[in-house]
Amino acid sequence: MKQLASLPWEVRRGPGGHFQWRSNGTAAAPGAAGGTQEVMMLTSDVSLSRDPAYAKLVRAWAADLSGFNEVRVRVRLRLRVQVRVS
Image 1 (cartoon, rainbow, N blue to C red):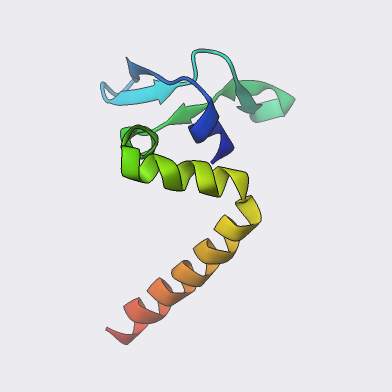
Image 2 (image 1 turned 90 degrees about the vertical axis):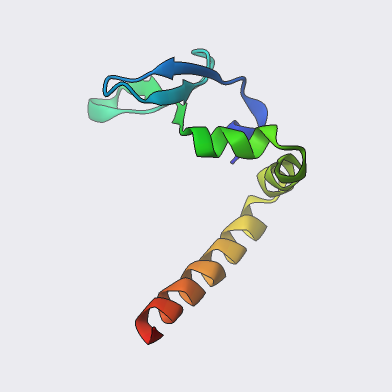
C-alpha cells in the first residue's frame, strides 16, 4: 500500500503482451534465492492511486496499515461466509 501511494509508476508491456506497471527501478522487492526483483503493479492497482476519490483512500490506508489489515480481514471473512451461504 505504501509503495502504491508513494512510488512513481510507468507502464510497460509484459512478456505475455499485457500491460504492467513498474516503479521506474526505484524500488525492489525480495526475489528468488535471496535476490531482488522489480516492484510491479496491475493497471487496476495503479488506477486506485490515480483516481482522486480512491487516491484519498490509498493514502489513508498507506498511513495506517494496521487499520487496513483489520478491515481487510473482516471483509474477507464476510465474503467467505457469503459465498458458502449462497
